[in-house]
Length: 279
Image (cartoon, rainbow, N blue to C red; front, side):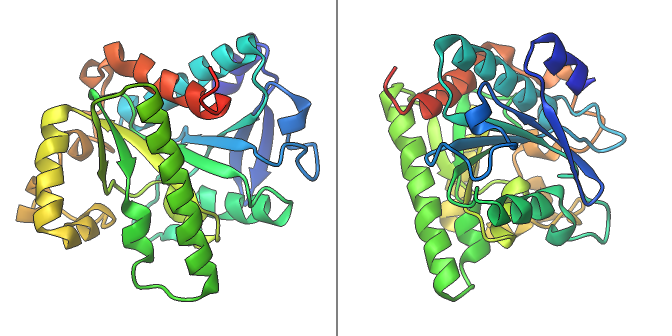
């Protein structure tokens, strides 16, 4: 279904299978194509959103909204003649019980991208961007890497900070006033980080949920552990997770929970990232 839509829009996506997972590569130019080794664009921005969903969930927010927002941004960027981007729609972001980060589709994907010269590209992950009016720039990478040591980790931390700074510069350029830096749930960034590639996750939340969770994290920074624990059930800790995130991976993640009036904010953010704040 996704490939059919992309074909109808004349994107001619490349479908790459890695470890049994089918990833869709979308570019407006052969310079950003997976066929071009090494990539001609040394300053390439790679935009990522997973298209898979949990079997019993409609997957409207997690993650259909971000997929459609990236497609809309791609149309605008193509029309504007901007070629510094590559979009990857990833498979197997959602894990089954007992599986870990190395089972994620993004882990084996990132290893492959690193090995063929894309490791120094700028990776932005878009996940659960369909509900809310507040852009969330995730700090979960800091939490994941907080106890790890080594020169590789130091470099990755530095690169993550560069990605975050670019995201902050972009929201300032766009005069976006509803933006927060807080940790976010498990996403494709976990697989990328485990494979040694820096990535920055972007999501959305309603302003009331974002404010309440931001206050909680300031008081209890270790609460971020709950967000990466997919086995957390109806405990006291689970009740403190923003309602939007609790609805993911279940039957309540339906289209009627979406806030399409704010989709354009995400699209504008994506386009400004790719244009380098020049337009």
